[in-house]
Image (tube, rainbow, N blue to C red):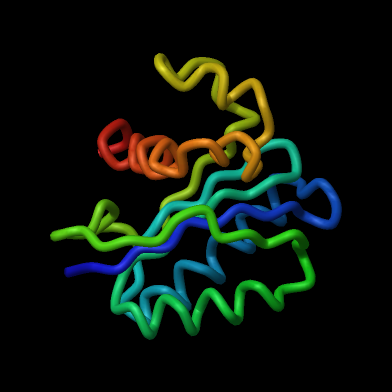
Length: 138
């Protein structure tokens, strides 16, 4: 079984596209070395990320991510186990949600920033939301 963890956080300042790409390249390199896959979403200064892999490795990486000074208010939304990876081919996928106008059933999430409050009543929606991107981008 594959362990997954989804968290949200807020950047300390709005990140320009170039900085987001640097962050993505760093995450991809580190995740490749650790055999971790996942997806990173960015919207209006907020992040949502899913990490998946061996549980101890994911938790250790998450502990490191929580110490990163580029963001704050890091909150775990949901953890769990799945039979196979959602993002098997990606060390880290990425979507800048500020550049997406329409996502069918998730329009209300796109209009709001990605925050824990968007998913606090039903964390399963966070899982459904982020894994939506594994099908739409392949």
